[in-house]
Each structure stands twice: as structure tokens, then as C-alpha cells.
Length: 243
Image (cartoon, rainbow, N blue to C red; front, side, top):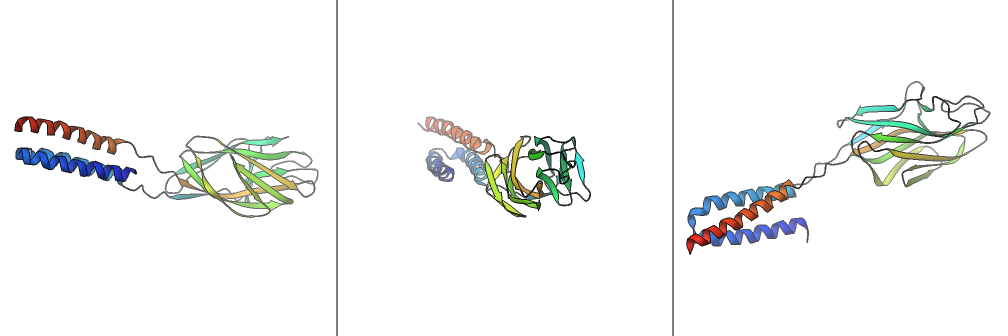
């Protein structure tokens, strides 16, 4: 039985009980009417549909290259004023400034050999970036992201927690099952690639999220329960007076 059907039955049964009580003692009509109105209002609140959540798109590009050892924050963005923070670069032989973004986006994966630098690496550093962490200051669902700056790779992948995406070039990737990132929690993002030669890279140019709706509290249903309990006491009092 759904919550809507359950409340409907409660209200229907309550109306029947109150009709008997009214016939027994008309002077209680005002009090009973108040209780009924309270129950109807409480059930209306409980059945009210949740507000439509809004989406926010984070632009992870920068007009000029940024290399930073500190977390990179984007925001507050959109009507919901959400802040996204990228931090904790993963890999081997990481340089000091291993968080990198530029006009093509944030560096999610890079392999550097002797041919040149990628994502803030110096030539010949022979290292790899293969992951990072992200977090939000509000609970959101991850909706989609764009792969950009895909160079010198024959394949690539990125995982947000347990959700894996495989791709072979630039383009939009959509979460079939939107990923919930709770406010303040840290999500580990891991990446892989198959370099063509001694270097390869791919970047994220944007990330779209949807603000997670707030979970409604139990107050409306508790209010209905309290009203029903009060109605039983009132009915008992009326029957005693009538007898």
C-alpha cells in the first residue's frame, strides 16, 4: 500500500468516525472540524510534490595555464551557489604543481616521457597522473561531463567511484545512473590511457551536476498521527457524555 493510499484510508475512516460523533453531540462540531482541517492540511503537506532540482555546469577551463599544488576550487556557480573542489592528484613522479588546467580543461590523465611536458610536467620527468579527488559543498547528482584535449592516446577511461567510462576521443559522457556526491564527501576519480609514443593526455572541460533535493522531514505525517490520536480521545469523551 502506498503512502498516498494509506493516508486516504485514514482520512476516510476518520471522517466516518467523526460523523457518528457529531450525531451524538452537536456541540463538538467546532472541535472536530478543527481536527479534520488539521489532518487534511498535514496530509496535503505530506503528499505535496518535491520542487524540481536545478542543474549547474562547472567550466573547468582557464584562459591561461594554471599549475597549483593546492586544491583548485570552482564556484560558487549557478543559482544554487555550489562550490566544486578538485584536489589530491594521484600518480607517480608527480611534480610540485601537479594540478593543472588551461583553455582545454582540467588535466585528468597524463603520461610524460622524454618528448615533452604535459599538464605541468617538465620534459623527461617520466611520470604519470592517473587520478584526483573531487568534492562539493552541497549534495549533488553528477549528470555529465566533457572529455577534451585528447592527445596522443588510443584509448582512455575515467571512473567516478565504481562508475566507469571508456572513450576514444573528445565528447560528452553521460551518467546512466546519476552519481550522488554528498556534501563534503570526497569522491576518488581514477583514470587510465594508452599512450601513442612517449606521451599522452586527456582533460575535462566541464562537469554538470544537479542539486540533490532535500529529504522531507516526518513532521507532516507526525502531525496527522497526532491529530488522529486526539480525535480518538475526543470521540471517547463525547460517547461518555452521551451515555
